[in-house]
Length: 257
Image 1 (cartoon, rainbow, N blue to C red):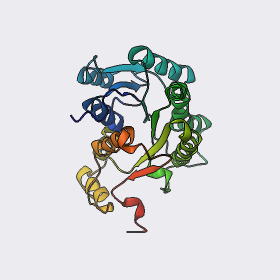
Image 2: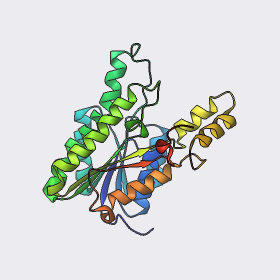
Image 3: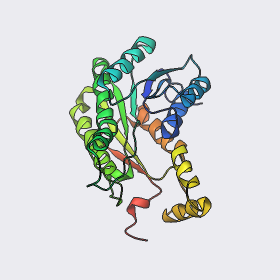
Image 4: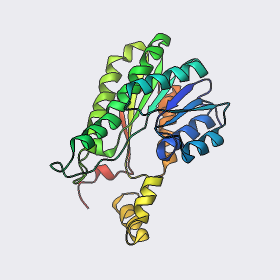
């Protein structure tokens, strides 16, 4: 541990699995007090509570699509730790459908979680950050926010908008000490990706096919996203604002295969 986040308090939404869990673990290892979150209080939440410990972490069940729940998430953070230095908006969901077959409810749920969810928590946390004149907000976007993959509608719509939200808020509050940046991961070996690969007729062949699409010939790991979030959360990144960082092994720069 190098204590790069010593004395900082962070909220990481959607942090009981995958990229969010990796970020929460890395932040605690670097000295932060971390509020972990999910819309479910399940076995994954229990495991993260046990792993991180009650001294340095707090679990709050909250659906980020619910404005009242996000206000409660922020209020409980301040009640427990006294401040908010870092907010990582990681909670999200995949919605992939034919545009004309997509139901209104599925459209609304995608936008309410992947876009409005980030804004709900940000809006709740901003007053505390502005009062202290400092804060780092990190939105977990996606390569889908830069490139369009056929068959993935409407997820890219939400992620493009999340990158726009990042840039807009970063400029809006820059002079008041708030930095807003985003990270756009590509294919990362989360539990969800592992489950998808396992469902394929030949899981190893599909894993290798996906790896071969990447210039580095391997799939990314959650901790590689977590280290970038750590940098953006730390004072080392104090002059980085309204910026998106791609973590995709260079895949989005390839014109064709």
